[in-house]
Length: 464
Image 1 (cartoon, rainbow, N blue to C red):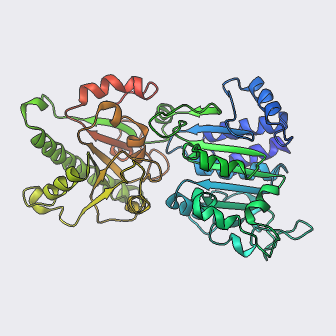
Image 2 (cartoon, helix red, strand yellow):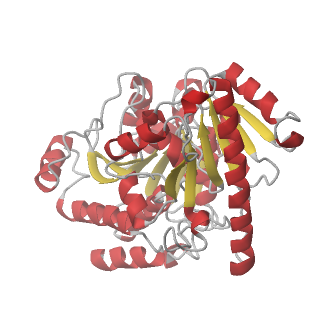
Image 3 (tube, rainbow, N blue to C red):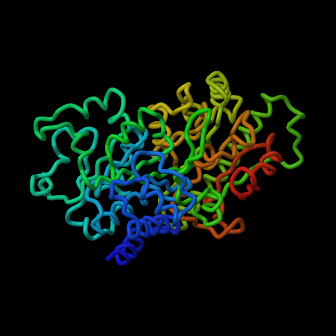
């Protein structure tokens, strides 16, 4: 049954090689390691015999990190994990953790059968009785509990329960509500979950849950297994440290080589000396060149739409500003008559992150909506880019006053690497539709430095 279930899930969910490899690792571990035995130290020793790179679980329960590059498909892999654990009789209860409200809502959609991106589509066992979704908004109704004989309390009799929660729902002030006594079940919902003997915890953007308070709340759920997914397996903060529980890595360089993301490129003017103009004028030149390239991409995307019949993609430009004042000056210039005769008036969105360096929910929501907004052509973003938004229609990035290392970080490039059609449509730079699969960075003043740093910064990949 185990091998058959593995093959069936890989085929039905059309898993990409890195997703399939991750699922195969989980299958091997479940077949050879007693993860539910209640002895994390013994489980770690058994895992290290198979995967010596795993140094420590770094939690009170067995927890393993799958470090997959942005755009490869971490949410679909979550669905594959859940399907496999259920079909092999390992678990009926799952707790999917999101780092913020935007990702939380996205995950709820992705696990809803009517959603166009439903991640369990094709799993026959879920066709008639899809998993029951319990969220931070409906758990207190008793929706996620069972009758004494183990049957689900919902009318459809769903055997699989998937809890999807924002970290704040189990932490901070909101977490107190989840720990209150519920008369319908005789205990708090948090306690109910912690007593389950097959709860599996799946952590999206796992690097966001290493702070002491959040980690304590997670440990209190007492899961039999933790599955962590992130593109950046490092703790956040000034003293960032690498994860010690990474069992599988598939980095950005590999994703580019295998064609699962857009091909990045750096654009500069031929025979142009950036030192020959002032900093302000250099920024204006970069913005002008970005618009010219943006217009070229828009034409190519429209042409591909007409030839292929696939949905039309409306591209936009991302301008990364240094601070709030810098962003306001840029917006004033971009919307002025002096810049393309005022063409971009009312077509610019200015989004600021919180001062502490994390996206505000409002900022993230606005960035995510760009995939459906056909009016906005230029987004000015303040602060470094974080997880929580990656759209398929970002084609041009203008990082102003940024170092080569900052430009090449996955937080910057990763936001625009996702392919609009889920796969590359061209066969390389010589293909007539190569522009559909390309993300371009305008970097006149950092071109040589980027080329020099690229092979070091991103695991052997070189941008040209």
